[in-house]
Every structure is written in C-alpha cells, then in structure tokens.
Length: 120
Image (cartoon, rainbow, N blue to C red; front, side):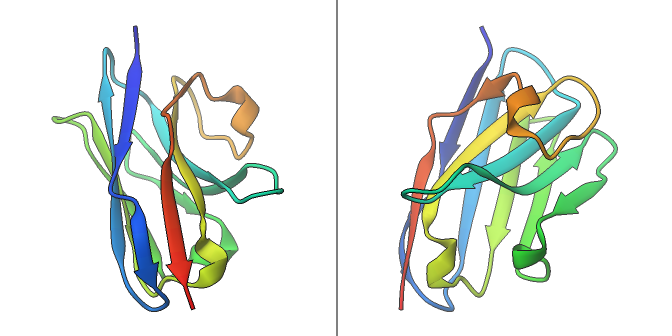
C-alpha cells in the first residue's frame, strides 16, 4: 500500500521559513504536489513537481516557496520562505501517476497533513 508521510510543520512568525518533507513508500510517482486547507476553506493547490522536475506554483506563493524532489529517496520537499499569516493551513502531500493537474480530486494518494501556523 502506498504511504505518504509529511513532516516539518510548526508554529513560526511572519517572515520566517519552514521546510516540509513528504516521504513516499511503495512506488514512484509521476507528479507530486502540495495542497493546503485553512479552517473553513476548501483545499487549494500550492505547488507541484513532475518526474522531469517541471514545477508549478499557485500565484500567492511564487517567489517565496520552492518545491523539489529527490527521486532516489522518493521524497518531496517544500521550502517556504517569507511566510505570511495567510499561509496558515494544514499542508497535504499528494501524488498521482500521470500528468500534472491542479485538481485535488484526481490525486490518488494523500498524506495525513502537517499543520503550519504563521503568527503576525
């Protein structure tokens, strides 16, 4: 069974940095992505990376967040710099076997989520 395990969340102040990790077991995925969900809001796309290292970002994190992956370790990372209070959410790692999509409904596997809280 495929498992995705996130780590690295926490409580930080505005302007600080965090690095999230997502370790995948069981198989290698074509596309891995980060989504986030704030209280009372829908889950939203944050960033994604394909097997060929093509990256995608939502506009609100461009220039601040960097997604990367280590295929040998089956691990994906999200480096988050210049964090803002509006980045506060539960961050989820997700994966799918085929081409990239912004739609969370087409991702096959999900992690349990890690809380990121940014205080002002």
